[in-house]
Length: 85
Image (tube, rainbow, N blue to C red; front, side):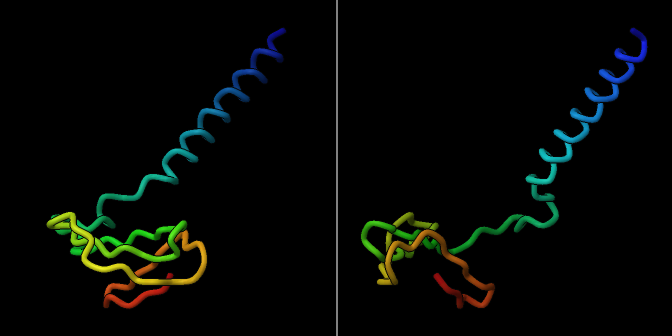
């Protein structure tokens, strides 16, 4: 009976540690976030209309719509403003 309790405790502790590791692997460190600054533009892919909306984040207005290939689902933009969709 003692051996079963020890095995159960070890399994429970291992599971808890694994869950914490999984949880913290998805949290981005605060130091890597852009502190005190925000992006001037947001790029939102519109899958149904096959374009990307460029939104001014200060005014929350769409300032441009860029036609792209079929079903865009993501956008990557470099620090210099270039990127791909």
